[in-house]
Length: 231
Image (cartoon, rainbow, N blue to C red; front, side, top):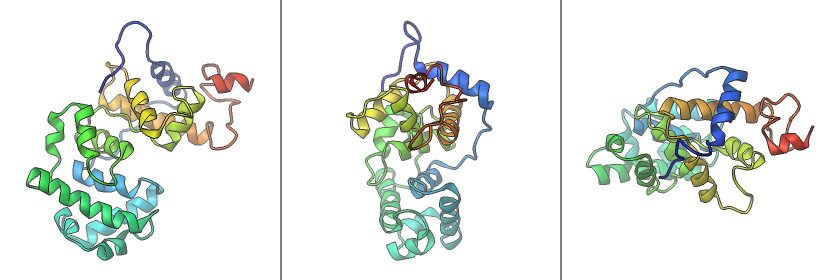
């Protein structure tokens, strides 16, 4: 994966990050899961509210003694635990399948070898499993105990990026994700990409909302092409 260089034209994410930090403050770090636990959590929460996906995660932990047991469980058994998430019938198949795939690759249920890869290599490796896309793989790298500097780009971030003209409407999903990942400054650490994700999510929930954005009062209004048109 290519990242922007630290000379010449700076990444637009730097100015965005600075203004959002000034407005919201520095977010507190999130809870750390092992990479395998984070994979399960991210798959459960892919299209589901946090409180619902966390409940499903806890249901799995209570019913099965470990993730190896989930890997060998039937889809019906898994579905009983996760039925409240979005698309449970899909993920009750994808989650055990991904866990079995890791065991086949590694000889055990562990993703620790990702720590020895580049971010790009690790993202690619995770995305070989069905149901694991760019967002889920970045969650595993950045939010787990691996603490790698992948940027988690969700629907909130893509909405902000479109209005800030970081991507174009006619680009496909994978291209949008790659372009945004390439904007991550070389000087950023894993904590910076995590903070950036949280800050942009707050912005998207408060100002850069679905439908008509609330540009008035937005901390990025004077930087944002869409916001400037709303003045």
